[in-house]
Length: 297
Image (cartoon, rainbow, N blue to C red):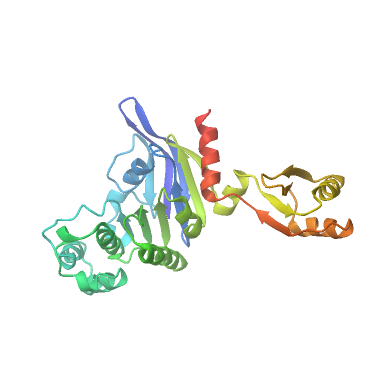
């Protein structure tokens, strides 16, 4: 489990993280979202012991990172995949990490196979594309078979096949009972991958909730109704106390009601309908709405 308790991090007069507290539970993928400058990177670096918090503490399985006796066996992290000695091969890089953390040498070949780098194992990393460097970084994070994964922008540089692969990998790791904490600016990926969200802005916690609840809370949902008899349908909806709006294309928008209710009303009043479908905002739309509200405060 990952826990932050009242963490603040200041750089002079600038407060990058402001009394931030949250927990990341095992068994699910948790997305970490926030606009540029929100404090995501600083938070992750505090968690991994790369920055000392001004106040509070960040724990991984109940310990600060520097207290972990075997860090790679406890937490695997992906930060900047380019921070690899270019003269080493992928196999050599992982072997050095394995030896320094008392990890069996067989794990090197296992994780190279997992991330799809077996054929490139003995190539020097200086020639790696961003996508290959990303896969190597993920291999390093998996090397100690850790129960906790912290991944910063894991899909960067990956092609569509690679994105599908990492999406499945994160879900599989979470299904095994691991804690998977993923920082990303790609809302579409988080919508497809994460079950839970931690959202911050200006270093402060804005939301700690499921993806479904986040979208419902920060967006407008409605039932779209297409009919050649819009006035009769509107009257039926209003007569039932249902808030109704007009769409841009002449359709109707019934708010706060289930599609089945709309269908029953249409049948009862003899209204012909071409379409009745629920509409909800995307995660990106919900996030932007929250961000605009916070910006205006």
